[in-house]
Amino acid sequence: MDRRALLGLKTQPLKTGGGGGAAAQATYLRLPTITANVVRSGGRRGVMTVETGVDTPDAALRTRVAQSAPRLRAAYAAVVQQSANAMLPGTPPDVERLVAQLQAATNTVVGRAGARLLIGTVMVV
Image (cartoon, rainbow, N blue to C red; front, side, top):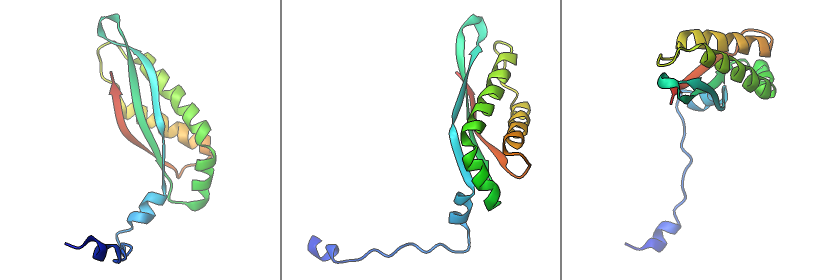
């Protein structure tokens, strides 16, 4: 096969259909992983990690969420640490309660409802 012939080929950009893959990605803001200290069974120390992101379909609110990212991280860190402190050693985290508290923190920081919190992974190691 002649490789020089392949160099002349142009690549065509992929056209997306009506699936909205690019539009769906534009509404999502991924935040850094939040960590907190926990007491594991046997009295050992552990780490609780929570992956978070915010989905905001409204463009004006999305701008406010992006500008408030440091405040969101600080609020999320406080909520995750409180949740980690409330855990009994050897028990799994209460994810439903954690999500409700993180969503309330999101609404408080942003100033109104409309930004939806998304949770990736909640893990205690």
